[in-house]
Amino acid sequence: MKLLLFLAVLLFTLGRAEAQEKKLEFSTTQLSGTVYMLTGRGGNVAISAGEDGVYIIDDQIRPVTTQLLQAIRKISNKPIRFVINTHYHADHTGGNETIGKAGAVIIAHDNVQKRMSTEQISIFTKTTTPPYAEVALPVVTFNDQISLHLNGETATAYYVANGHTDGDSIIHFPTSNVIHMGDMYFNTMYPYVDLDAGGSIQGIVSAADLALSLADDKTRIIPGHGPLATTEDLRNYRDFLIKAIANVQALIDEDKNLQQTIAAQPTAEWDEELGKTWITPAQFVTFIYNSLEGIQRYTPPVAKTE
Ligand SMILES: [Zn+2]
Image 1: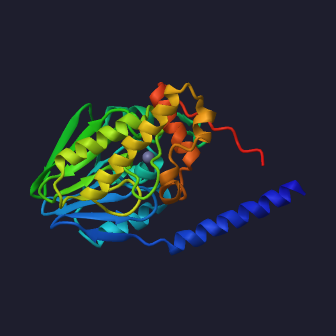
Image 2 (image 1 turned 90 degrees about the vertical axis):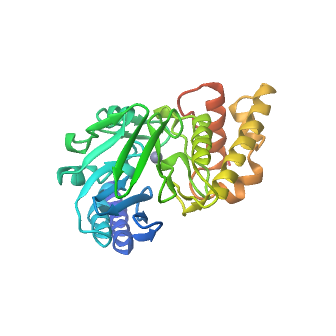
Image 3 (image 1 turned 180 degrees about the vertical axis):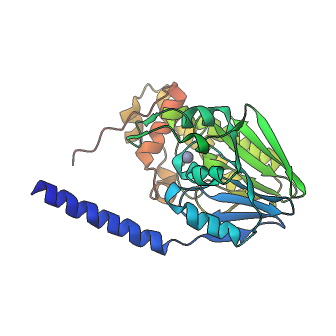
């Protein structure tokens, strides 16, 4: 009986996933003569397409690679020469295997290659990710920054240590005046800080600071998740982070433990606006608290007993 119930739930879930897959539409926004933002399923993608060919920043989740490639083909028929992964998460690297097999060179920070080539355990998402196939791994890695001189501009990926993970880059397209933030920026929602993979809230602030130093008032900011943003949006996000961190630090200074800090609701003023999409206020406070206390893993808040 239990098995039948399990099968029924499984079929229902698969059916729903399939229905969602069919509904999925990729939306592309042109941001300059050569740079586009693409949204579909997974992290937002940047595409540079021009006379030298195509390269992309991130490639979504694996099951949608065919749709992703179709959407890119609508912009350019030239081959995808490079993929830069902003970090190792599967919703930003899922297309690597197919696109790598087709001949694209995959580029990422050293730590992305390390994490993708070994099993990863996340306490937060309660998942274990096996090593990726070799063809999906970055073949060019860097420890600080790397530039691509293509399509009429020099785009640079800058490593920012210990932010969303321990391998994040933000990518600046100076002529197009576009910055791809990877998951250092979740627009309109609380950010996910992957403490289990070397993330910290301080690094997220550093990434916002770096991006703001590269931006002017007209820069288009592509967040890892959420809608396209302006420089002012990013500045507000940075200010919110600083205030939220100060609120949590004040409670730490009063010797509050994690549970007491969560109970004091230090992010109450943003919870309605930012805490309903994915990361909950309690999870976000845990990210900040553990970052400030130097605890490099996610410690789940005790569940409510009501
Ligand atoms: Zn991520």
